Length: 305
Image 1 (cartoon, one colour):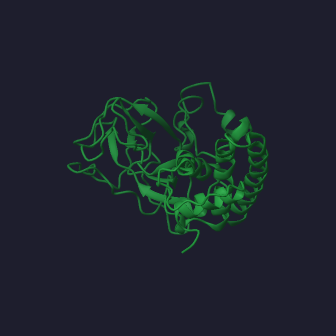
Image 2: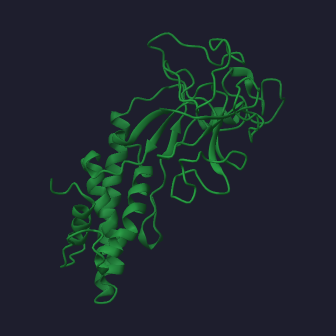
């Protein structure tokens, strides 16, 4: 179907900057194709992070790497942040972690081969952890951190020299939290254009056009290329703002997400339930975040919004 392949989208971006050539394939090796190909992936990934797109939302169980309590056999016990009990591998298809549910009904059961669930899995290791709510209760976000750990190497099937998010020869990106059998809600890297929201496709074409306008026209008419870039930047801003409004109208959000001024009230102070211990709520132990908002949108020429 026209408009649903990377080549179609690249040609639409070329049309937007009024470039006369048409690509037969985005990998055909022409100058235009190489320029489009260099910008294509980065534009897709950044645009996915700029809005909490509904089509890119994914919930998945996390692979356990370490249990600081030592109650889970066949995993490590070293967790980088001492305020958290569990360390999980960062999903390889995750572009942006949104939030980590505390009381999701169906907790994760994705545990690496050779691991076993701790004995008496219905009993929480810490008061308030692991309790299963009644049906219909709201999903409450738990604190978590995203950081790099050098203690645990990626599994053999994940080549660290290949571009996997969160995987490198030196270390790997991990998620630390106090939630047992955790599930993460995140933005996944949706690579197939036929799955994209129409508003995302329109914004992507304009974003790609703004990135290629300068290089495309550099040899023949750089001033014209600069003008086309600025026009497409205006289109991107409008599309993304519309998408953020749509996200707010269509999304379902919990009122239990803590706001900044409430979090600030519990920083510093005694370890006995206030300050860095933060355990008085049963779910706020230690520093961390309850979730991430979307990214600001960087655009050609140094502008962002």
